[in-house]
Image 1 (cartoon, rainbow, N blue to C red):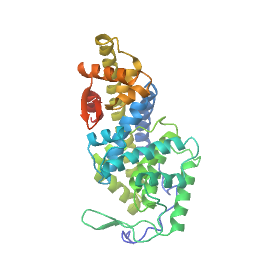
Image 2: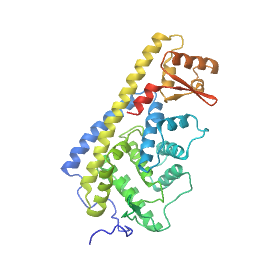
Image 3: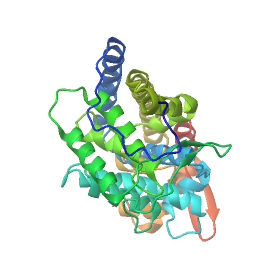
Length: 358
């Protein structure tokens, strides 16, 4: 009997799948993905101030992951709102910022508790900023752009919670399965369970990163998986449907492993470019403005594309008036661009901004 997309998938199989997940094609791609991911982890560990990765690069993942759900904001609006949380940002921008807040929350929580249903709920509540929980009301169905039902997730609080408990067992099982293969399986299963009324896609993509950290494949959750999904959106959804309707796990797992390999390499290259740019500016400032130069000052202006006088003060580099003079000097030399918006003066690192958008 063909799979009925309009009926709740309460028969979603428990994990692990009843197939050989470690096919030749999967293992070959897993080796490539693990190698590049290890390179990224090693490079990130060499960055003296990893705030540039958490505060800037992760915002791009937040923006792209939200864009998959048609929550769109511009880079300028996003970064400006990030340094001015009390300002007037539009709802989409605020929701993207909450994605990063949820990711950082989950990252810090991993030191206290493992990935679990309760943590999933805490994450989605931050993203949606509502007291959301596991779906209790039937009627949820996923539709394509033409309004056709493409998938109906399981219904019933007990059913959903049982499948989430099974997912937890699989995540933490000592089964010898390559963690990247396991990540691909858990991502499908979470999306298939679709435990919340909204925010499932973004929560699932955050869980991917947290799992990589939990498995010590990354030290910090910095990886652009959403970039690959956007560029290969049709294959992403076809891969999910292939597992649901034909138990085609190999195509799906290979897709996710390629996503890890591609985005880990892109992130590696981007971090290398930012580090080289930072070193270049460090040398030029030291030569052209030795009286204001300090390693800490350079790190502050590379922590975020938008710098405020307050950032220099909070870094204990200088008092407010002197901090203002330092930033203005850097602007006069062309390293920053001063932009007055309301009462605030932002000092924009255009070179860093350009690198973040590549």
